[in-house]
Length: 327
Image (cartoon, rainbow, N blue to C red; front, side):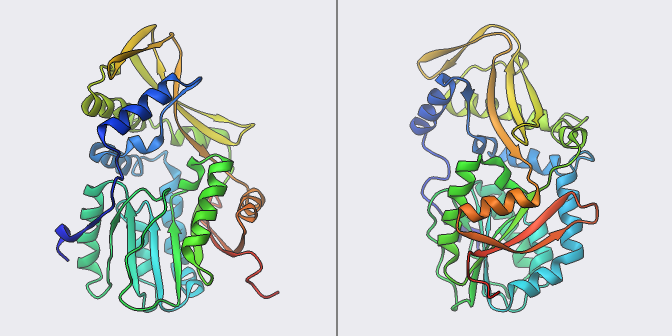
């Protein structure tokens, strides 16, 4: 496939004026916050791939081990003639394990907000699966999607959402996203989703504070992006990465913390920071199996199957419409 033919969605990244308003609104809020999608410019996407290689980052290791052990069983559950739509496809490493085991898939639709990783992934997939129609979509998966017309009618559409990205949304947002997915998958469809499980706090915190400092560089790259795209003057040395586990909320909370009292130019105005003041940039919720089933139920979904990695630290779950399974 000619990568120049990529279907580029109108606006995975807002224009500078829209980005400026998002930054201003978030930095004026109390407490300050910025959306986590700001991580994923070309440099941020590359840094995230490096995070996944760090020894402390158990999520990728466990999910990959799970897929290696259970990909055939997962593919059998999905059935024949599936259109597979992946939210936040990235490098699609785990997806290849699934595609290798699927029976006569109709098409694969990777949905990715960053065009460079999407193009690279499509090139690799075309080489590995030359007979599989790949229909890439550069878009923000949290918005309503206009999926490409498949080359033939699928028996079902399955939305694949790996990597525990659902944990980056609070309960209200996660419920809304699952409801949107329920609509997009159709009456006979399903959702195959990665869900990180609750475990010892030290293991969780280490995954978001790797010794090599890659996660800290990834977090600070958000400020690099704002400096480049908006002409801000964030001093990277004046901020530090912080990620800690909030046991009460059951989630990692990642922030950029001001090391001193300072002012930063954002557009034509300045934003003041106190020493120790934080910008919340991401959450990463961890669930018990019962908690996630309850969340799915709020979105009109039920858990049909659950697969666990050998260490039982991570799960992949298959969701269908509530009441669609004969008892």
